[in-house]
Length: 582
Ligand code: PEP
Ligand code: MG
Image 1 (cartoon, rainbow, N blue to C red):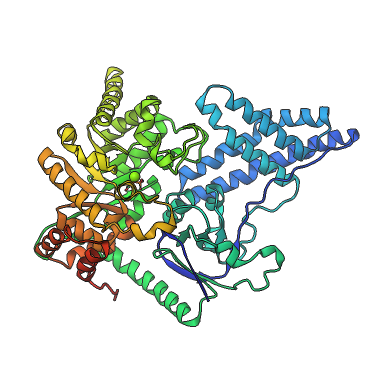
Image 2: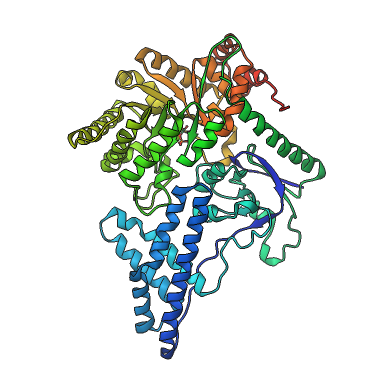
């Protein structure tokens, strides 16, 4: 048995066969004799039609699985495959340069994409990546190359360096046991989709592909089975019988736990001495609402809207955004839904929003900082928020706020959006405006802007990254990454105090809130609203129901003087009730 370690991406344990998926590159193609021109053009037409049909089928499957937003990506690509402009450009190359259909369609797609990129129109430029993708799909069809997911013919754990969202979304769900990636990060699309689908996933598993061996050399000593723990990040190759037993017991316990979680979801998260804590969910797409509500989420504390903007050729229109926000607001009514304005840049680049090469993207033009150069993007999003607010309780917060100047920007953008709508006579709902506290500076100077806002939410993932100088995706820096580090705890305490003075409602939406021991520390420090991945809600609820606030407050106060995360963890871990499901 070999043991590797990665980063948790989607919880759950699973063991079984594995299959390595390598997205097959589109073939290069060649040239033809002049007399074959007619036949080659006919072949191209047939392959384009077939590729469009494939994409339509994928869109249908993804939609049936309850993911309409992801399905729209494939509908758009099917339309490109049917677009006569691409076929005409490719046919001309076959006729004039005697390229075969494969080479012609790939070259035509590249040329078409280059034209789109040069048009000084963000929306059209953004279609370029899709056009190239579709050209490759038609080329693979022409070459009779199997789709990259063909190896998944029995229930298996999928292994890859990285998985494109289009591949992840098309993996047959009835055969997809889990995902283990050598690269990627928990905020990458593969991880987001795995969480949305409830499939255990581990990312950033160093040396995974080498350890598994090259599938093309016969596999020789390749392990026959993998076991992955999506919560701890552990990956075992050829697990021994004790590990297999442990995973089987874990999977059984997981199933029983989910049943009891749903039953317990109706119980309030109230301490033994009567203090209630609101537990809300973090979501990335409207599709995640149902599962969050089933687990008792009392609203959405963080809607990471950037996932509506990724994997597309251009930003969603205002109407599309209204539809998405409205769906979530209605699903959770009367509870609040907190929309986080676009947080791209950092590890979430968007091809159609060129930010430019940056040496340190996490310290670059990320999130709200983009609004200084591209305010329209944010005004459109805020207009959609004001319109969706007419349907229920909606809050909006800006990511990556550093100081009062950024708050000025947020308020100006919001006023611009609201004013335009009102002037046009459109119904405008009421929105509470707030900020994420995820840059230490924003906490240090919160007095300077707090009275102008309604709320703030601690983004402990970035707060840890920027406080500890630890790249949040770097698995080698785990030693610094415990959210119970005293530096983080002191910043949280400072945020609690400054919020109380400035009349700001304060919550936590970073991963810290979903860690039961850390959640207890946060409650002890004074937090009364925690937002987390919905899968974390049951354990945090149980932990809160098993303790007295007076104990938590005393431990939290003492923890502020502790020297290490380990000593703070030693205070709170024993307070987490051992929750073995019946
Ligand atoms: C955070 O930084 O803690 C946060 C909640 O936002 P994200 O993880 O999306 O950066
Ligand atoms: Mg953040």
